Length: 242
Image (tube, rainbow, N blue to C red; front, side, top):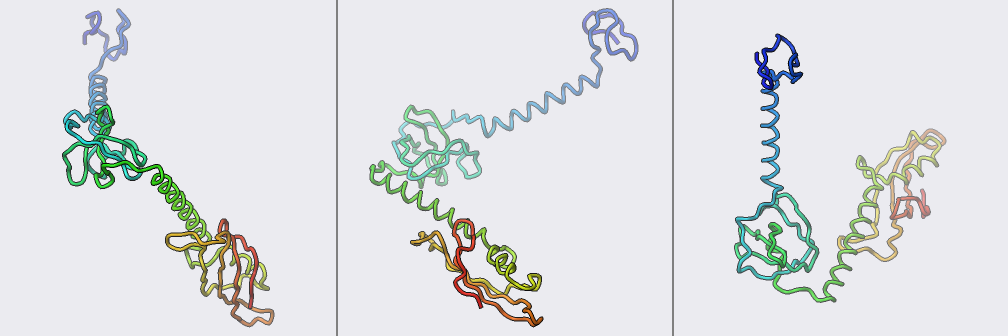
């Protein structure tokens, strides 16, 4: 084997050339280097295919001014499977290409710089007024608050038997034999409708039926009605208990 740097003959099984000190390039090292280059090339090609955002083949020439009607995701491809590149807020002013591909259009900013693809059903040709934008904000804030409240209430109940977790704990703590408790059913009156939050939504009522062992060892049925916190499910008061 010959040193690739100084062309001196190399001693067998040596890792460095005894003449110039250069590292010996073995076949295995060459193969590893080649394999590493191939892997790197494949990774770069993969990411360039979806994140390189090369929109040279798409044109905004002759496009029209449009406005977004909601928070609108811009994607790298004309499909929901495209990578989300950014989100445009409502009433964003953009240029939309004329070509519509299965409900998707290519859009760009006002300098005709391509941004990506959006669903055309969330575009309109006129901007919202100041009053309309304020109304949209209020509706969005209300929807977010309703979503938060629904999640708070939902998390207060057991996913196993739909009992109210803190009401069960409270009831067990007031039994002679907590281990004898068996849940029958729980009903509640949520502080919201499907679309709105009710007045006085800080609390709501829960009724639970159960069985347990009394002081004489007999099995009896109990019925408890409680007012609980909408925020964390804490017992505000026991309205009735039988």
